[in-house]
Length: 594
Image (cartoon, rainbow, N blue to C red; front, side, top):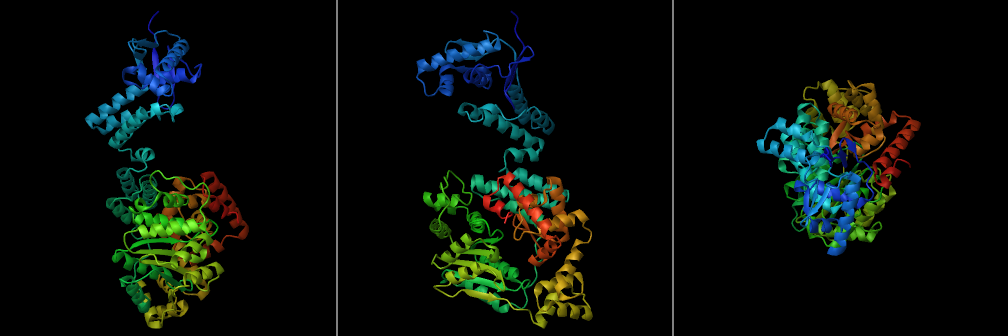
Protein backbone atom coordinates (compact mmCIF):
# COMPACT_ATOMS: atom_id res chain seq x y z
CA UNK A 1 0.00 0.00 0.00
CA UNK A 2 1.53 3.33 -1.11
CA UNK A 3 1.80 6.39 1.05
CA UNK A 4 -1.31 8.60 0.84
CA UNK A 5 -1.34 12.30 0.08
CA UNK A 6 -2.43 14.08 3.26
CA UNK A 7 -3.54 17.67 3.80
CA UNK A 8 -4.58 18.95 7.20
CA UNK A 9 -6.48 22.20 7.59
CA UNK A 10 -6.94 23.82 11.00
CA UNK A 11 -7.08 27.54 10.14
CA UNK A 12 -10.63 28.75 9.66
CA UNK A 13 -12.01 25.20 9.73
CA UNK A 14 -10.89 21.65 10.46
CA UNK A 15 -10.57 18.96 7.87
CA UNK A 16 -8.28 16.16 6.74
CA UNK A 17 -7.98 15.52 2.99
CA UNK A 18 -6.79 12.00 2.13
CA UNK A 19 -5.73 11.54 -1.52
CA UNK A 20 -7.86 14.54 -2.46
CA UNK A 21 -10.97 13.35 -0.60
CA UNK A 22 -12.07 15.43 2.44
CA UNK A 23 -13.08 13.51 5.56
CA UNK A 24 -15.54 16.29 6.40
CA UNK A 25 -18.11 15.30 9.04
CA UNK A 26 -17.45 11.56 8.86
CA UNK A 27 -15.99 11.40 12.38
CA UNK A 28 -17.85 8.81 14.49
CA UNK A 29 -17.41 10.77 17.72
CA UNK A 30 -15.99 14.02 19.05
CA UNK A 31 -12.97 12.51 20.82
CA UNK A 32 -11.60 10.87 17.67
CA UNK A 33 -11.76 14.21 15.88
CA UNK A 34 -10.23 16.09 18.83
CA UNK A 35 -7.34 13.60 19.06
CA UNK A 36 -6.42 14.33 15.44
CA UNK A 37 -6.82 18.10 15.97
CA UNK A 38 -4.64 18.06 19.07
CA UNK A 39 -1.87 16.17 17.28
CA UNK A 40 -2.20 18.33 14.15
CA UNK A 41 -1.22 21.50 16.05
CA UNK A 42 1.51 19.84 18.17
CA UNK A 43 5.22 20.21 17.29
CA UNK A 44 6.09 17.51 14.72
CA UNK A 45 2.50 16.23 15.17
CA UNK A 46 3.65 14.29 18.23
CA UNK A 47 2.78 14.33 21.97
CA UNK A 48 3.43 12.19 24.99
CA UNK A 49 0.63 9.78 25.94
CA UNK A 50 0.12 11.48 29.35
CA UNK A 51 -0.10 14.93 27.74
CA UNK A 52 -2.98 13.78 25.54
CA UNK A 53 -4.84 12.14 28.42
CA UNK A 54 -4.45 15.29 30.53
CA UNK A 55 -5.73 17.45 27.66
CA UNK A 56 -8.72 15.35 26.58
CA UNK A 57 -9.63 13.35 29.71
CA UNK A 58 -8.29 15.37 32.67
CA UNK A 59 -10.91 13.96 35.03
CA UNK A 60 -9.85 10.31 34.49
CA UNK A 61 -7.14 8.24 36.11
CA UNK A 62 -4.23 7.08 33.93
CA UNK A 63 -5.66 3.61 33.18
CA UNK A 64 -9.13 4.89 32.25
CA UNK A 65 -7.63 7.74 30.24
CA UNK A 66 -5.37 5.29 28.41
CA UNK A 67 -8.35 3.13 27.47
CA UNK A 68 -10.18 6.17 26.08
CA UNK A 69 -7.07 7.17 24.13
CA UNK A 70 -6.81 3.74 22.51
CA UNK A 71 -10.51 3.82 21.60
CA UNK A 72 -10.25 7.31 20.09
CA UNK A 73 -7.14 6.29 18.11
CA UNK A 74 -8.97 3.24 16.77
CA UNK A 75 -11.92 5.32 15.55
CA UNK A 76 -9.56 7.91 14.04
CA UNK A 77 -7.68 5.25 12.05
CA UNK A 78 -10.93 3.82 10.69
CA UNK A 79 -12.20 7.25 9.70
CA UNK A 80 -8.93 8.16 7.99
CA UNK A 81 -8.77 4.72 6.34
CA UNK A 82 -5.19 3.99 7.37
CA UNK A 83 -3.74 2.12 10.37
CA UNK A 84 -0.63 4.33 10.08
CA UNK A 85 -2.57 7.51 10.72
CA UNK A 86 -2.29 7.30 14.55
CA UNK A 87 0.76 5.55 15.95
CA UNK A 88 1.24 4.80 19.69
CA UNK A 89 4.88 3.96 20.33
CA UNK A 90 7.02 4.15 23.51
CA UNK A 91 4.60 6.43 25.40
CA UNK A 92 4.37 8.75 22.39
CA UNK A 93 1.38 9.29 20.11
CA UNK A 94 2.00 10.53 16.56
CA UNK A 95 -0.17 11.65 13.65
CA UNK A 96 1.08 10.33 10.28
CA UNK A 97 4.70 9.99 11.50
CA UNK A 98 5.92 8.37 8.26
CA UNK A 99 3.97 10.48 5.77
CA UNK A 100 4.67 13.87 4.22
CA UNK A 101 1.80 16.05 5.41
CA UNK A 102 0.75 19.42 4.06
CA UNK A 103 -0.48 21.51 7.00
CA UNK A 104 -1.85 25.02 6.62
CA UNK A 105 -0.87 25.67 10.24
CA UNK A 106 2.74 24.58 9.81
CA UNK A 107 3.07 26.41 6.48
CA UNK A 108 1.75 29.66 7.93
CA UNK A 109 3.91 29.49 11.07
CA UNK A 110 7.01 28.82 8.98
CA UNK A 111 6.28 31.69 6.58
CA UNK A 112 5.44 34.09 9.42
CA UNK A 113 8.58 33.26 11.38
CA UNK A 114 10.70 33.79 8.26
CA UNK A 115 9.04 37.14 7.51
CA UNK A 116 9.54 38.35 11.08
CA UNK A 117 13.17 37.24 11.07
CA UNK A 118 13.86 39.06 7.79
CA UNK A 119 11.73 42.09 8.61
CA UNK A 120 10.46 42.56 5.07
CA UNK A 121 6.96 44.09 4.57
CA UNK A 122 6.25 42.31 1.26
CA UNK A 123 7.23 38.91 2.65
CA UNK A 124 5.11 39.64 5.72
CA UNK A 125 2.12 40.49 3.51
CA UNK A 126 2.55 37.20 1.66
CA UNK A 127 2.72 35.32 4.96
CA UNK A 128 -0.40 37.10 6.23
CA UNK A 129 -2.31 35.98 3.14
CA UNK A 130 -1.70 32.36 4.19
CA UNK A 131 -3.69 32.82 7.40
CA UNK A 132 -7.02 31.15 6.74
CA UNK A 133 -8.77 32.21 9.93
CA UNK A 134 -8.95 31.44 13.64
CA UNK A 135 -7.34 28.13 14.57
CA UNK A 136 -9.86 25.28 15.10
CA UNK A 137 -12.97 27.48 15.38
CA UNK A 138 -15.07 24.41 16.19
CA UNK A 139 -13.01 23.91 19.36
CA UNK A 140 -13.00 27.57 20.33
CA UNK A 141 -13.74 26.87 24.00
CA UNK A 142 -11.45 23.88 24.51
CA UNK A 143 -8.58 24.66 26.88
CA UNK A 144 -6.15 22.40 25.02
CA UNK A 145 -6.48 24.46 21.82
CA UNK A 146 -6.05 27.87 23.44
CA UNK A 147 -2.20 28.08 23.71
CA UNK A 148 -1.75 27.20 20.04
CA UNK A 149 -4.55 29.58 19.06
CA UNK A 150 -2.94 32.47 20.94
CA UNK A 151 0.42 31.66 19.40
CA UNK A 152 -0.78 31.56 15.80
CA UNK A 153 -2.98 34.65 16.25
CA UNK A 154 -0.01 36.49 17.75
CA UNK A 155 2.13 35.59 14.74
CA UNK A 156 -0.63 36.77 12.42
CA UNK A 157 -0.88 40.14 14.15
CA UNK A 158 2.92 40.46 14.09
CA UNK A 159 3.11 39.98 10.31
CA UNK A 160 0.16 42.34 9.84
CA UNK A 161 2.08 45.02 11.76
CA UNK A 162 5.16 44.38 9.68
CA UNK A 163 3.09 44.60 6.49
CA UNK A 164 1.41 47.80 7.65
CA UNK A 165 -2.09 46.29 7.60
CA UNK A 166 -3.24 48.42 10.52
CA UNK A 167 -6.93 47.90 9.74
CA UNK A 168 -6.58 44.16 10.31
CA UNK A 169 -4.34 44.66 13.35
CA UNK A 170 -7.03 46.61 15.22
CA UNK A 171 -9.64 44.08 14.14
CA UNK A 172 -7.70 41.38 15.99
CA UNK A 173 -6.33 43.58 18.77
CA UNK A 174 -8.67 46.52 19.50
CA UNK A 175 -6.31 47.76 22.23
CA UNK A 176 -3.32 48.28 19.89
CA UNK A 177 -2.61 52.02 20.23
CA UNK A 178 0.15 52.18 17.63
CA UNK A 179 -2.12 50.66 14.98
CA UNK A 180 -4.93 53.06 15.84
CA UNK A 181 -2.55 56.01 15.55
CA UNK A 182 -1.40 54.88 12.11
CA UNK A 183 -5.03 54.56 11.00
CA UNK A 184 -5.85 57.98 12.45
CA UNK A 185 -2.93 59.55 10.59
CA UNK A 186 -4.01 57.91 7.33
CA UNK A 187 -7.57 59.16 7.85
CA UNK A 188 -6.33 62.71 8.47
CA UNK A 189 -4.10 62.62 5.40
CA UNK A 190 -7.13 61.50 3.38
CA UNK A 191 -9.21 64.38 4.71
CA UNK A 192 -11.48 62.15 6.83
CA UNK A 193 -11.32 63.70 10.26
CA UNK A 194 -14.51 61.96 11.37
CA UNK A 195 -12.82 58.61 10.70
CA UNK A 196 -9.86 59.64 12.89
CA UNK A 197 -12.20 60.74 15.68
CA UNK A 198 -14.19 57.49 15.45
CA UNK A 199 -10.98 55.43 15.64
CA UNK A 200 -9.95 57.31 18.77
CA UNK A 201 -13.35 56.70 20.34
CA UNK A 202 -13.21 52.97 19.69
CA UNK A 203 -9.67 52.74 21.05
CA UNK A 204 -10.63 54.65 24.20
CA UNK A 205 -13.56 52.31 24.83
CA UNK A 206 -11.42 49.20 24.23
CA UNK A 207 -8.66 50.38 26.57
CA UNK A 208 -11.24 51.29 29.21
CA UNK A 209 -13.28 48.08 28.98
CA UNK A 210 -10.46 45.56 28.56
CA UNK A 211 -7.49 47.10 30.35
CA UNK A 212 -8.92 49.83 32.57
CA UNK A 213 -6.51 52.47 31.18
CA UNK A 214 -6.73 55.60 29.02
CA UNK A 215 -4.90 56.43 25.77
CA UNK A 216 -1.32 57.68 25.92
CA UNK A 217 -0.42 61.35 25.56
CA UNK A 218 0.83 60.67 22.00
CA UNK A 219 -2.61 59.35 21.05
CA UNK A 220 -4.36 62.22 22.84
CA UNK A 221 -2.27 64.75 20.92
CA UNK A 222 -3.27 63.11 17.61
CA UNK A 223 -6.91 63.28 18.73
CA UNK A 224 -6.52 66.99 19.48
CA UNK A 225 -5.16 67.48 15.95
CA UNK A 226 -8.17 65.56 14.61
CA UNK A 227 -10.57 67.85 16.47
CA UNK A 228 -8.80 71.12 15.69
CA UNK A 229 -11.38 73.62 14.49
CA UNK A 230 -14.31 71.26 15.07
CA UNK A 231 -14.97 72.25 18.66
CA UNK A 232 -16.60 75.62 19.44
CA UNK A 233 -14.33 78.56 18.75
CA UNK A 234 -12.63 79.86 21.85
CA UNK A 235 -13.69 83.44 22.57
CA UNK A 236 -13.18 85.72 25.50
CA UNK A 237 -16.23 85.52 27.73
CA UNK A 238 -17.73 88.99 28.01
CA UNK A 239 -20.26 90.37 30.44
CA UNK A 240 -19.86 87.56 32.96
CA UNK A 241 -17.37 89.07 35.41
CA UNK A 242 -19.46 88.21 38.47
CA UNK A 243 -19.96 84.60 37.40
CA UNK A 244 -16.26 84.15 36.58
CA UNK A 245 -15.29 85.56 39.98
CA UNK A 246 -17.67 83.15 41.70
CA UNK A 247 -16.12 80.24 39.80
CA UNK A 248 -12.57 81.28 40.69
CA UNK A 249 -13.47 81.62 44.38
CA UNK A 250 -15.34 78.33 44.43
CA UNK A 251 -12.46 76.32 43.00
CA UNK A 252 -9.75 78.14 44.94
CA UNK A 253 -11.39 77.72 48.37
CA UNK A 254 -9.17 75.21 50.25
CA UNK A 255 -11.77 74.76 52.99
CA UNK A 256 -14.69 74.25 50.64
CA UNK A 257 -17.26 71.51 51.19
CA UNK A 258 -19.49 69.59 48.85
CA UNK A 259 -21.49 72.06 46.82
CA UNK A 260 -24.17 72.21 44.14
CA UNK A 261 -23.77 74.76 41.34
CA UNK A 262 -26.76 75.55 39.12
CA UNK A 263 -26.15 77.33 35.80
CA UNK A 264 -29.37 78.50 34.20
CA UNK A 265 -30.77 80.89 31.63
CA UNK A 266 -32.73 81.11 28.41
CA UNK A 267 -31.65 79.25 25.28
CA UNK A 268 -28.46 80.67 23.79
CA UNK A 269 -27.55 82.74 26.84
CA UNK A 270 -24.10 81.14 27.28
CA UNK A 271 -24.55 78.32 29.80
CA UNK A 272 -22.16 76.06 27.90
CA UNK A 273 -19.42 78.72 27.86
CA UNK A 274 -19.70 79.20 31.64
CA UNK A 275 -19.61 75.45 32.26
CA UNK A 276 -16.55 75.09 30.03
CA UNK A 277 -14.83 77.87 31.95
CA UNK A 278 -15.65 76.23 35.29
CA UNK A 279 -14.15 72.96 34.08
CA UNK A 280 -11.05 74.73 32.73
CA UNK A 281 -10.50 76.53 36.05
CA UNK A 282 -10.96 73.25 37.95
CA UNK A 283 -8.53 71.39 35.72
CA UNK A 284 -5.91 74.11 36.07
CA UNK A 285 -6.27 73.62 39.83
CA UNK A 286 -5.71 69.87 39.25
CA UNK A 287 -9.24 68.83 40.02
CA UNK A 288 -10.56 65.60 38.55
CA UNK A 289 -13.48 66.47 36.28
CA UNK A 290 -16.18 64.53 34.47
CA UNK A 291 -18.83 66.04 32.23
CA UNK A 292 -21.81 64.62 30.38
CA UNK A 293 -24.68 66.06 28.37
CA UNK A 294 -27.93 64.43 29.48
CA UNK A 295 -29.73 62.96 26.50
CA UNK A 296 -31.74 59.90 27.46
CA UNK A 297 -34.54 60.56 29.96
CA UNK A 298 -36.05 57.11 29.43
CA UNK A 299 -33.00 54.99 30.28
CA UNK A 300 -32.43 54.51 34.03
CA UNK A 301 -28.96 55.58 35.19
CA UNK A 302 -27.87 56.29 31.58
CA UNK A 303 -26.54 59.77 32.37
CA UNK A 304 -24.99 58.66 35.66
CA UNK A 305 -23.28 55.73 33.95
CA UNK A 306 -21.62 58.00 31.41
CA UNK A 307 -20.61 60.44 34.13
CA UNK A 308 -19.05 57.75 36.34
CA UNK A 309 -17.32 56.15 33.36
CA UNK A 310 -15.72 59.49 32.51
CA UNK A 311 -14.72 59.95 36.15
CA UNK A 312 -12.96 56.58 36.20
CA UNK A 313 -11.18 57.40 32.94
CA UNK A 314 -10.03 60.71 34.40
CA UNK A 315 -8.73 58.90 37.51
CA UNK A 316 -7.74 55.40 36.25
CA UNK A 317 -6.37 54.06 39.56
CA UNK A 318 -9.56 54.84 41.47
CA UNK A 319 -11.27 51.52 40.70
CA UNK A 320 -8.44 49.59 42.34
CA UNK A 321 -9.27 51.19 45.69
CA UNK A 322 -12.90 50.02 45.65
CA UNK A 323 -14.15 46.97 47.52
CA UNK A 324 -15.66 44.02 45.64
CA UNK A 325 -19.26 44.90 46.48
CA UNK A 326 -18.92 48.46 45.21
CA UNK A 327 -17.27 47.24 42.00
CA UNK A 328 -20.15 44.80 41.45
CA UNK A 329 -22.75 47.54 41.85
CA UNK A 330 -20.88 49.82 39.44
CA UNK A 331 -20.34 46.96 36.97
CA UNK A 332 -24.12 46.75 36.62
CA UNK A 333 -24.12 50.11 34.81
CA UNK A 334 -20.54 50.76 33.60
CA UNK A 335 -17.53 48.83 32.34
CA UNK A 336 -14.93 48.01 34.98
CA UNK A 337 -11.62 46.37 34.12
CA UNK A 338 -10.77 43.03 35.71
CA UNK A 339 -12.82 40.11 36.92
CA UNK A 340 -15.95 41.77 38.25
CA UNK A 341 -19.31 40.05 38.54
CA UNK A 342 -22.22 42.51 38.18
CA UNK A 343 -25.29 42.16 40.38
CA UNK A 344 -27.86 39.56 39.38
CA UNK A 345 -30.62 42.19 39.54
CA UNK A 346 -30.65 45.91 38.72
CA UNK A 347 -29.06 47.99 41.51
CA UNK A 348 -31.32 49.77 43.97
CA UNK A 349 -31.21 53.53 44.53
CA UNK A 350 -29.51 52.97 47.88
CA UNK A 351 -26.83 50.79 46.28
CA UNK A 352 -26.15 53.30 43.48
CA UNK A 353 -25.90 56.22 45.90
CA UNK A 354 -23.48 54.29 48.12
CA UNK A 355 -21.34 53.04 45.22
CA UNK A 356 -21.21 56.52 43.66
CA UNK A 357 -20.17 58.07 46.96
CA UNK A 358 -17.41 55.49 47.52
CA UNK A 359 -16.13 56.00 43.97
CA UNK A 360 -15.92 59.76 44.48
CA UNK A 361 -14.24 59.34 47.86
CA UNK A 362 -11.66 57.02 46.29
CA UNK A 363 -10.53 59.71 43.83
CA UNK A 364 -7.24 61.33 44.82
CA UNK A 365 -8.15 65.00 44.87
CA UNK A 366 -11.10 67.32 44.42
CA UNK A 367 -13.89 66.30 42.03
CA UNK A 368 -16.25 68.26 39.78
CA UNK A 369 -19.19 66.40 38.20
CA UNK A 370 -21.00 68.32 35.46
CA UNK A 371 -24.36 67.51 33.84
CA UNK A 372 -25.41 69.74 30.94
CA UNK A 373 -29.05 69.99 29.80
CA UNK A 374 -30.16 68.39 33.04
CA UNK A 375 -33.78 68.77 31.95
CA UNK A 376 -33.16 65.73 29.70
CA UNK A 377 -31.69 63.65 32.51
CA UNK A 378 -33.28 60.37 33.62
CA UNK A 379 -34.98 60.44 37.02
CA UNK A 380 -32.72 57.74 38.51
CA UNK A 381 -29.60 59.80 37.81
CA UNK A 382 -31.22 62.97 39.14
CA UNK A 383 -32.14 61.19 42.36
CA UNK A 384 -28.60 59.90 42.92
CA UNK A 385 -26.99 63.27 42.11
CA UNK A 386 -29.37 65.14 44.41
CA UNK A 387 -28.59 62.80 47.30
CA UNK A 388 -24.85 62.94 46.61
CA UNK A 389 -25.02 66.74 46.42
CA UNK A 390 -26.55 66.83 49.91
CA UNK A 391 -23.71 64.87 51.52
CA UNK A 392 -20.25 65.85 52.70
CA UNK A 393 -17.97 63.92 50.35
CA UNK A 394 -14.61 65.61 50.55
CA UNK A 395 -14.18 68.41 48.03
CA UNK A 396 -17.00 67.70 45.57
CA UNK A 397 -18.81 70.14 43.29
CA UNK A 398 -21.87 68.94 41.35
CA UNK A 399 -22.78 71.23 38.46
CA UNK A 400 -26.17 71.18 36.75
CA UNK A 401 -27.03 73.41 33.80
CA UNK A 402 -30.57 73.84 32.54
CA UNK A 403 -32.68 76.10 30.41
CA UNK A 404 -35.08 78.59 31.93
CA UNK A 405 -37.91 78.26 32.60
CA UNK A 406 -37.60 74.78 34.11
CA UNK A 407 -40.23 72.70 32.33
CA UNK A 408 -39.24 69.49 34.10
CA UNK A 409 -40.67 69.26 37.63
CA UNK A 410 -38.27 66.42 38.44
CA UNK A 411 -35.30 68.75 37.90
CA UNK A 412 -36.71 71.34 40.27
CA UNK A 413 -37.34 68.65 42.89
CA UNK A 414 -33.80 67.28 42.53
CA UNK A 415 -32.26 70.74 42.96
CA UNK A 416 -34.46 71.36 46.01
CA UNK A 417 -33.50 68.00 47.51
CA UNK A 418 -29.79 68.70 47.00
CA UNK A 419 -30.23 72.09 48.67
CA UNK A 420 -31.66 70.91 51.98
CA UNK A 421 -28.46 71.39 53.97
CA UNK A 422 -26.97 74.37 52.16
CA UNK A 423 -28.05 76.79 49.46
CA UNK A 424 -26.71 76.04 45.99
CA UNK A 425 -24.54 78.48 44.07
CA UNK A 426 -26.84 79.73 41.33
CA UNK A 427 -25.34 81.35 38.24
CA UNK A 428 -28.42 82.79 36.55
CA UNK A 429 -27.24 84.31 33.27
CA UNK A 430 -28.87 87.51 32.05
CA UNK A 431 -28.81 89.08 28.59
CA UNK A 432 -25.69 91.09 27.76
CA UNK A 433 -25.86 94.85 27.91
CA UNK A 434 -25.13 96.89 24.79
CA UNK A 435 -21.43 97.38 25.52
CA UNK A 436 -20.74 93.70 26.17
CA UNK A 437 -22.90 92.63 23.22
CA UNK A 438 -20.92 94.89 20.88
CA UNK A 439 -17.62 93.53 22.25
CA UNK A 440 -18.73 89.96 21.51
CA UNK A 441 -19.93 90.86 18.01
CA UNK A 442 -16.56 92.51 17.29
CA UNK A 443 -14.77 89.29 18.26
CA UNK A 444 -16.75 87.47 15.57
CA UNK A 445 -16.63 90.12 12.84
CA UNK A 446 -14.05 92.84 13.49
CA UNK A 447 -14.79 94.43 10.09
CA UNK A 448 -18.55 94.88 10.57
CA UNK A 449 -19.75 98.36 9.57
CA UNK A 450 -21.76 100.37 12.11
CA UNK A 451 -25.10 99.76 10.38
CA UNK A 452 -24.56 96.01 10.23
CA UNK A 453 -23.41 95.93 13.85
CA UNK A 454 -26.44 97.91 15.00
CA UNK A 455 -28.75 95.52 13.17
CA UNK A 456 -27.10 92.49 14.78
CA UNK A 457 -27.37 93.97 18.27
CA UNK A 458 -30.98 94.94 17.81
CA UNK A 459 -32.01 91.50 16.56
CA UNK A 460 -29.93 89.50 19.05
CA UNK A 461 -31.41 91.24 22.09
CA UNK A 462 -28.37 90.49 24.25
CA UNK A 463 -28.41 86.71 23.66
CA UNK A 464 -24.77 85.61 23.00
CA UNK A 465 -25.69 82.77 20.63
CA UNK A 466 -27.76 85.09 18.45
CA UNK A 467 -24.95 87.66 18.45
CA UNK A 468 -22.34 85.10 17.37
CA UNK A 469 -24.48 83.46 14.69
CA UNK A 470 -25.84 86.69 13.23
CA UNK A 471 -22.47 88.42 13.23
CA UNK A 472 -20.86 85.38 11.61
CA UNK A 473 -23.53 84.99 8.94
CA UNK A 474 -24.01 88.76 8.43
CA UNK A 475 -27.71 88.02 8.23
CA UNK A 476 -30.74 90.09 9.20
CA UNK A 477 -34.38 89.24 9.81
CA UNK A 478 -37.01 88.70 12.49
CA UNK A 479 -35.60 87.45 15.77
CA UNK A 480 -37.60 84.22 15.49
CA UNK A 481 -35.65 83.42 12.32
CA UNK A 482 -32.17 84.18 13.71
CA UNK A 483 -30.97 80.60 14.00
CA UNK A 484 -32.76 79.50 10.84
CA UNK A 485 -30.92 82.20 8.87
CA UNK A 486 -27.56 81.28 10.38
CA UNK A 487 -28.24 77.58 9.85
CA UNK A 488 -29.12 78.15 6.21
CA UNK A 489 -25.74 79.79 5.74
CA UNK A 490 -24.05 76.71 7.18
CA UNK A 491 -26.06 74.32 4.99
CA UNK A 492 -25.04 76.04 1.77
CA UNK A 493 -23.02 73.51 -0.24
CA UNK A 494 -24.48 70.43 1.45
CA UNK A 495 -26.30 68.01 -0.84
CA UNK A 496 -30.04 67.47 -0.43
CA UNK A 497 -29.59 63.96 0.94
CA UNK A 498 -26.98 65.20 3.45
CA UNK A 499 -29.43 67.76 4.85
CA UNK A 500 -32.11 65.04 4.96
CA UNK A 501 -29.83 62.83 7.09
CA UNK A 502 -29.10 65.76 9.43
CA UNK A 503 -32.84 66.24 9.96
CA UNK A 504 -33.03 62.61 11.06
CA UNK A 505 -30.19 63.10 13.54
CA UNK A 506 -31.86 66.25 14.84
CA UNK A 507 -34.97 64.52 16.18
CA UNK A 508 -33.04 63.40 19.28
CA UNK A 509 -31.23 65.69 21.70
CA UNK A 510 -27.91 65.45 23.49
CA UNK A 511 -24.83 63.57 22.36
CA UNK A 512 -24.71 61.44 19.23
CA UNK A 513 -22.40 58.45 19.27
CA UNK A 514 -21.77 56.26 16.21
CA UNK A 515 -24.41 53.78 17.36
CA UNK A 516 -27.03 56.55 17.43
CA UNK A 517 -25.96 57.92 14.03
CA UNK A 518 -26.28 54.47 12.47
CA UNK A 519 -29.63 53.79 14.14
CA UNK A 520 -31.15 57.10 13.01
CA UNK A 521 -29.82 57.06 9.44
CA UNK A 522 -29.21 53.43 8.54
CA UNK A 523 -26.10 54.55 6.65
CA UNK A 524 -23.27 52.15 5.90
CA UNK A 525 -19.76 52.94 7.14
CA UNK A 526 -18.59 54.84 4.04
CA UNK A 527 -21.82 56.83 3.73
CA UNK A 528 -21.82 57.62 7.46
CA UNK A 529 -18.17 58.73 7.35
CA UNK A 530 -18.97 61.08 4.46
CA UNK A 531 -22.06 62.49 6.19
CA UNK A 532 -20.25 63.24 9.45
CA UNK A 533 -17.24 64.72 7.67
CA UNK A 534 -19.51 67.08 5.74
CA UNK A 535 -21.54 68.01 8.84
CA UNK A 536 -18.35 68.78 10.75
CA UNK A 537 -16.96 70.86 7.89
CA UNK A 538 -20.15 72.91 7.70
CA UNK A 539 -20.16 73.54 11.44
CA UNK A 540 -23.65 72.09 11.91
CA UNK A 541 -22.17 69.36 14.12
CA UNK A 542 -19.35 69.77 16.62
CA UNK A 543 -17.14 67.20 18.29
CA UNK A 544 -18.13 66.42 21.87
CA UNK A 545 -15.53 64.12 23.43
CA UNK A 546 -15.70 61.00 21.20
CA UNK A 547 -19.18 61.75 19.88
CA UNK A 548 -21.00 64.61 18.21
CA UNK A 549 -23.59 67.23 19.03
CA UNK A 550 -25.44 69.92 17.15
CA UNK A 551 -23.88 73.35 17.33
CA UNK A 552 -26.68 74.39 19.64
CA UNK A 553 -30.02 73.02 20.80
CA UNK A 554 -31.75 75.72 18.76
CA UNK A 555 -29.93 74.57 15.63
CA UNK A 556 -31.11 71.04 16.30
CA UNK A 557 -34.69 72.11 16.91
CA UNK A 558 -34.83 74.09 13.64
CA UNK A 559 -33.67 71.05 11.66
CA UNK A 560 -35.97 68.68 13.54
CA UNK A 561 -38.92 71.00 12.91
CA UNK A 562 -38.40 70.55 9.17
CA UNK A 563 -39.38 66.87 9.51
CA UNK A 564 -43.17 66.26 9.79
CA UNK A 565 -44.39 64.30 12.86
CA UNK A 566 -45.28 61.15 10.90
CA UNK A 567 -41.79 61.05 9.39
CA UNK A 568 -40.22 61.57 12.82
CA UNK A 569 -42.24 58.62 14.14
CA UNK A 570 -41.01 56.44 11.27
CA UNK A 571 -37.37 57.41 11.96
CA UNK A 572 -37.80 56.53 15.65
CA UNK A 573 -39.30 53.11 14.77
CA UNK A 574 -36.42 52.34 12.42
CA UNK A 575 -33.90 53.50 15.03
CA UNK A 576 -35.45 51.26 17.71
CA UNK A 577 -35.25 48.27 15.37
CA UNK A 578 -31.63 48.88 14.46
CA UNK A 579 -30.62 49.46 18.10
CA UNK A 580 -32.32 46.22 19.12
CA UNK A 581 -30.40 44.38 16.38
CA UNK A 582 -27.16 45.90 17.74
CA UNK A 583 -27.98 44.67 21.26
CA UNK A 584 -28.32 48.20 22.70
CA UNK A 585 -29.58 48.80 26.23
CA UNK A 586 -33.33 48.16 26.53
CA UNK A 587 -33.86 51.66 27.86
CA UNK A 588 -32.19 53.16 24.80
CA UNK A 589 -34.37 51.10 22.47
CA UNK A 590 -37.49 52.03 24.41
CA UNK A 591 -36.58 55.70 24.17
CA UNK A 592 -37.40 55.57 20.44
CA UNK A 593 -40.70 53.82 21.01
CA UNK A 594 -42.19 56.33 23.43
